[in-house]
Structures are given as C-alpha cells and as structure tokens.
Image 1 (cartoon, rainbow, N blue to C red):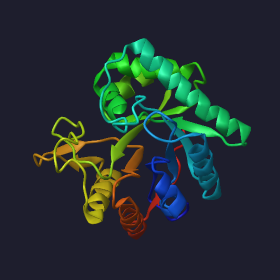
Image 2: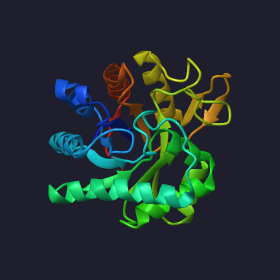
Image 3: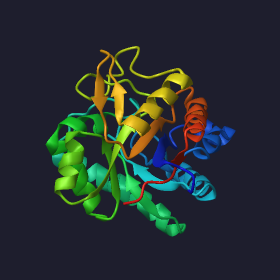
Amino acid sequence: MSGFIKMIDLNADVGERTEALSSGHEEKLISLISSANIACGGHAGDAHSILEVMKICKKYDVNIGAHPSYPDRLNFGRVALNLSADEITQFVFYQVESFVNIAKANGFEVRHVKPHGALYNRAARDENTARAILKGIEKISREFILYGLAGSVMIDVWNNENFKTASEAFADRRYESDGSLRSRDFFDAVYSSPEDAAQQSFLIATEGKVVSVEGNEINLNADTLCVHGDTESAFEMLKFIRDKFSENSIGVSGFQK
C-alpha cells in the first residue's frame, strides 16, 4: 500500500444474475473491487450462486458480505413492501443466517452486511426499519460491519447501538440536494457513462463531496464506494475508476474497522 496518498474501499452488489456468473463477467467485475455484497436469496441468488461467488472473492482476496433484501424476486427487491418491523427482522435474520452458514461450511469469513434496494432506501430515512434490520443481524453476530448510506438515519441508528459501520457513497447513482439518492423512477437516476462515474468517485474520494442533480455540492464522509453489479456498464465503470484512482495515487483496499 506504500505510495498511496489515500485508501478507499470499492464495493459492488454481485451474485444477482446467473448469466453474469456463468459467462465470467462476474469474475471480471469482482477482480476490480475490494468488497462484495452477495445477494442471499431475497431479491436474487441461491445457495449455489452464493458459494460460487464466495469462491471468486477468495481467489481475488475480496471481502465477503451479505446483501439481504425484501423477499421479492419479482421486483428485484426494489419495491418497498408493507411489512412490520418484526417481519423485517425475521427475513433479514433468515437470509443472513443462511448466508453465514454457507460461508462457515466452506471456510469463508463474512465481514459485512449491506441491505439491498428498497430496504436500504427505507432504512436510510426510517429509524424503525434501520433498527429492525439491526435486530435481525445481531441475532447472528455483533461483529459484522454494517454498510449504509453516508449521512443517513441508518448510520446514526447503527452507530448509537455500537455497531461497526461503513458510510457508503455511490459511484453510479445521482444525488438529490438533501443527500438522498435520486429515485430510479427518474431516467437520470443512474449514470450510464463510466467517465461520469469515475469523476464522481474521484470527487468523493478526494474532497468528500458530490454534485447533486440541482448542481449544489453535498458533503459526504464516505468509507466505501459502490458500483451496482447489474448496471450495464459496471465493469467499464470499475476500470475507469481504478485507472483514475491509480493515476492520482489512490489505493483500493477492503474496509477495516
């Protein structure tokens, strides 16, 4: 790590598409990141895909994390379900416990947990949801690092409960002026250009800020940067980001806390 002026974690949501795994695209993507959020059955993924992705992560020394979601494969976990806090606790517990059991049976370590999609977005603004997620996770272990939106309610709730947290920013998502992610209902919610994603990542890593859709600067204290694995240009984005970082002496390393 010598020679780098800064280190940052680079994560991606993976294990969500069987075709990406079978074609080798998933492995190419994982080779460029330092932490992987692996779908664990709620919105995508199954025991087979979980194990295969874990093996790839081990090959490239990438941190393994669980990526629980609303149990809604039809909508890819991107629609908020009207479920109680207890129901959220239970499905988070079930998904993460099953994931951890697969890891343990094969000698892998689970380092972190990151909620997915609509569950993540709801927890970012709703204390009860953030706390329900935490209750499901702490039934298994209090040692996981919890990944959540930088500056959001979820990070505050988890920190107040003395959990280890990593504040997350997004390379491929646009931001509203209040620091929330732009809804995917808008056509411009996700960057399609690898250059734009790389520039936003560089600004976050070096200055701790992003430019919102309205044009104002938002301060972000980010420990980790995410590229969504199902974004069409995800691999190209990661290559651009890694090249931009390398040119400016920014290193990529799994988040430690």
